[in-house]
Length: 178
Ligand SMILES: Cc1cc2nc3c(=O)[nH]c(=O)nc-3n(C[C@H](O)[C@H](O)[C@H](O)COP(=O)(O)O)c2cc1C
Image 1 (cartoon, protein in one colour):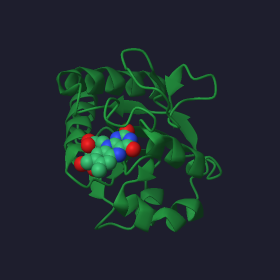
Image 2 (tube, protein in one colour):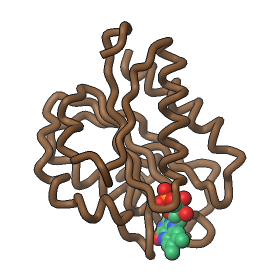
Image 3 (cartoon, rainbow, N blue to C red):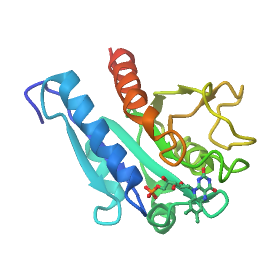
Image 4 (tube, rainbow, N blue to C red):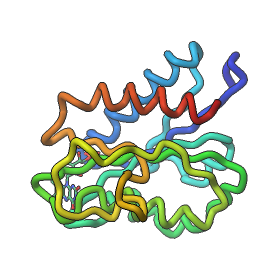
């Protein structure tokens, strides 16, 4: 627990390190905003997902692979996702995808994770506007299709936007957390 009295667990899975890089940037940004080392980062390949229950605020990071499939470490842990008890926890999601290469499946895993967690009792924050992207279909959108269910990053086609998006999103999380 930091001096700020707040502790955030960030759990991610990443195959080619893009989600990992985003996780580290989000950690740096939130630590800077809270002026304390509030974020602990865990790769779910090495840390059991269950450990996230120790945190009141949790950030999950996931990438989409193979035409709308889960990143491989999330796939391996998928049964555990449904076992999580996140009652009264606050959860924010972020996803990595490729909107041009996989326009019909952009950020699908982000949406699948959101749906899988929806029975866990958590409250979601950090919805993200869908403007500024070019894709055909996504399971990562809210029901009204106006937002992604979490921060949507595309380092293949919009790498230059990633840092600003992370910065804006982290400020948004701070506001939503009050
Ligand atoms: C073989 C392959 C399949 C992919 N399939 C999808 C997809 O269906 N939807 C999507 O949005 N992105 C897809 N992507 C893009 C990845 O999500 C993107 O490269 C991401 O940054 C990978 O993050 P990671 O290295 O953290 O796993 C795919 C990439 C590759 C190489």
